[in-house]
Length: 500
Ligand code: MSP
Image (cartoon, rainbow, N blue to C red):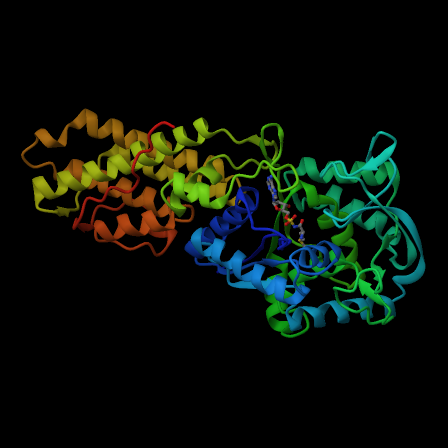
């Protein structure tokens, strides 16, 4: 049995999650469900990043104290993830006591080892990113430095601070990036490596004076400082794996850690995170899986750009979580930004879910009931369909194991297209005893349904129940001659959407 530990970024709960956050979260969820189907010991972690200036200010704006504010927002995130059928095993919050404990212990340990030292900081800061920008990284608008992501003016920060000696890890980080294949797609590893080769790895500030930023973990090495929000946030991945609280579990899980992130937070999850882990004598995660942005009207979808597509909208337009999840995964792209266009999403939904899959399921179900009273006995499958099923499974596994979910879905859809051609060609409705045709089609549908189940769990479950089977493991997707189907229902899985 394999092991699979998968995480999403922990999101800032200053506003509701939107389609961009769902993009990452549904991908991580689909991967977690796939690994459960393989029988792997799977642990899926998501949550909220609740400390820091951004949240402190959001709470002030809402007229609330920070803790009550994040309590309310964390519940909201959980409700959204429930609406999207996100099957996380733990929802971590950086205000959870076990996490604050991990932050303190990690900071103490790094301080003890001499990786943290006092200094003074002067530079430009973006509160929306919670990030310092150096010259060359920010853009200049009318003589003033602006955040390149949020297009908001940066704030000048000049204060005493504590630094993390990241520069010590330059060779190590370059080695991990260039030799170990821990970043997918590899282009992102090269991107970070060349930035480091160009500019060097500089020490980073990891604490802010408490009178400036009060909302956060108090630095264990100096009570007048708050731990920097990113340093705090990255450690959530260790807390989730029971670092320090359960060493056996940690040993089991950590070597299989997969972090799913958007490319905006690549630097933190490679240069900074690999250095922090090394300072604690820990290995880097097995994989950092990076994806590009969803864009809308030419800009990265986000609150600041004001071009957000809401999760409510997706759920409503695509008739619930399965429709929304499927289109998100069908457009999922690690390497390239994807433009949100309603026509494209509608047509994916209609042609793939409603027609190719849903309509086939409905036709086969109706025929099985009409022609064979719902009882379809096994026997030899149509050999070409049987081969196609086997080929689709092999392709699907290969793609899923390499995080290429869009291609995995294509393989399943190709199989279903063949099944549609098969039903049209063999015309089982004209036959007196279409057992062989319907059995071959049910085998195909069952197999496709198991493969689709990580992405559309509800519809998959519904169809499996309707034809009298269960979704338990990916092994069951293999075609066999000796099954017996009892078709109880011919459900309409996906209603088509009209124009407008
Ligand atoms: N709190 C930090 C992450 C800390 S992880 C230790 C953070 N939070 S965030 O709320 O801003 O979420 C960022 C993540 O949301 C991105 O990395 C990405 O996964 C997802 N996305 C937000 N908008 C997105 C798009 N428009 N497109 C694709 N993904 C997007 O950063």
